[in-house]
Amino acid sequence: MQKEKLRAIRKQKGYTQQQIADIIATDVSNYSRKESGDVKIVRDEWDKIARFLNVSVEEIYVDEEAKVVINNDHPVFNDQSSSTGIMTQYNNIPGSIIQNLQDYISFLKEENEKLKEELKSPRGRK
Image 1 (spheres, helix red, strand yellow):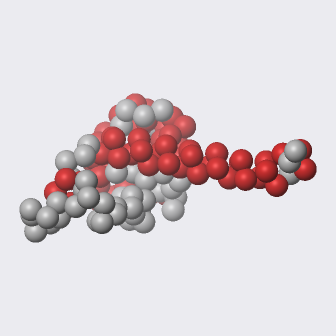
Image 2: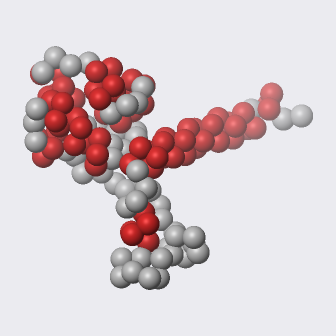
Image 3: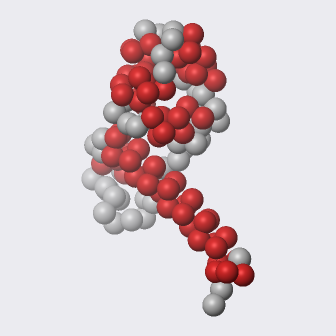
């Protein structure tokens, strides 16, 4: 889902994608994918962007589908000692690490699709 409110306010205030990318410590191509909705913008990034643009988060925020899948059956993450279970440990993971992993997963999915197409082509078969 494209972030039209974010894009409109960024342009209205005269900022480039590169400037916003610098604020959230990413490269411009990754930020472009965030703004176009291909990559999720995490909460701390929304906060940083809103502060930089001098607006409230609500003025630019667009609700997104969750792009992180959590397997509660995994023994490493299944924290039975608290009432919140997995969320206790999950919330301790910095947003930048989660985002980096999400970006890498997206990259791998793209590469996987390219390889599938390559295998389908006559040149890809031996």
